[in-house]
Length: 458
Image (cartoon, rainbow, N blue to C red; front, side):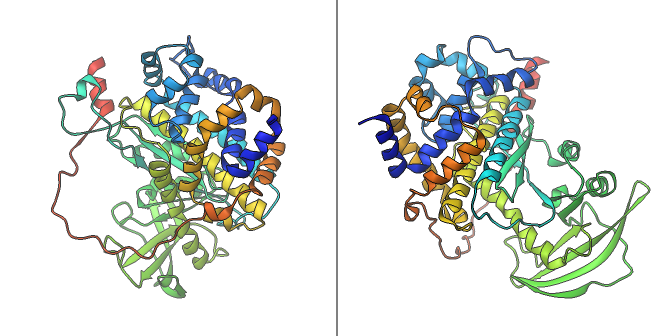
């Protein structure tokens, strides 16, 4: 059997694996990843172990192709060429801005792939605006392998990250990493504001709806926001009108009220949109209040509907935690844990583009939403070893050669046409039963790994 016949067999039996390898070949090429490291690393030097080798190992772990960093190293030992201790040492020194650059640069290429695909795509969340959804994610506690942690019983938190989602393209386009696991999202607001561009819409939970954030987005950045109203952060506002009923929305009744707030001598006019819920939330809230400075031509119903899309970033977090290996318990150093999270974000984006290509291939944009990331990632982990054994890297390069992003997007759609959709369709379940009452456990007992390590240097 020649190479073309063998490749066609894999396209038929495991098209998602073929598409993923094709995208990885472009995004995580040695030349591209090593250049990214040289541009963004400050303290760490390249040395004998190339950054591209480390990124390759972490991609295998993130995609669940290998269960651990050590297992990935054993599979690539000859190619890596250094000891496993050197790999871990390299990981614990990768600066957060390098992982962030990996997310940003690969997301740009994936956005080009998304735009180049011919076929139906989901309707934009807020037509006429570029939307950005933000949320904070404290990385899960790690094992206590670091010497200073061995005598501490509390959970060791390796860091905090604020991913930024482009919901129209289903891509995590940026991330703000922080080494301090005890840090609050509010301490990272200035970095978020640096990213805001005119005429965007930034959406997030109540922790982001501070007076400073909203004032600077609206007045300084000439942009827009939709934040959930926190009475603790914005307790006072002025209004000459009572709220008026707009109509009904899914799950409740909709009201709107024009308000103003004062901050540092400046006045900001906005709307307070209220959803009176038919059923209270899990936390017992009877109403949800949203603050926005979008113009009146954008209706309250449209804003309320858009806010429901905020949960797409929660879905992304769930996929990062359950479908991909984004938080590896053995990586206790903040730098290593944050880099692992960034690699998993990139793998999430690749799967997202693959799912979009399937929707384009079938001529139905909604199918992209119905492709299960779990089944897709599981297919990759099961098929990868056989695929790379049957067609090695040099042979794969000879089959595809150097392709432009447009050519790759066209090939992804062709590959997607061979997929048996029934094998990858999501399984929908009914509503969850309320959880039983539980006795209070040992909650809130944790420490910040970065602060412990800071004492080492003191």
